Length: 233
Image (cartoon, rainbow, N blue to C red):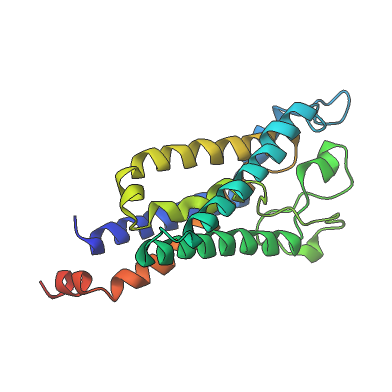
């Protein structure tokens, strides 16, 4: 398969994920239905919200693991034995992953969407707000700052690894993809069970983190001689 076909497939898949995320939140009640499974109406709270094991292992633990991986790659890049090509590519990975996490964080901090545990339907004070719903139609949006999921970005920021041309990553691409899917699912699931996020929040994070490497490496391949050759055939 040519580079052109591969990136076109990736781009279509990315668009479909965005459409699924939007439709899920805007036109269905799947977000609420899933979160209802982890909500206790009698105590008007999410029982796992303050679970210390979940917080320690799968929230703080995953976050610190991401920090260690990022710093480990940085150290590997600056070691004298790292050749120039590998160093340049590792620094790209670090920059793109950090940019993805920062964009998610900025969008989250400016969001009018409140977390499930802050919504009136779950014992909080805020009204439920769908994507692109007009805020002046809502009486109380609450504290907001909950869309997309910041914690899920600790896993999905590493989608960039699937696009890196580094030989050892290319050889292990399927394994890396499985690990990313599992870690992203775990990070998102923990926040959903605790009442911190809806499913669409997690999917939106994956969509945003996917967009950065897709755009960067896609544009890089558009300029490559291989892509030009494919296009001229």
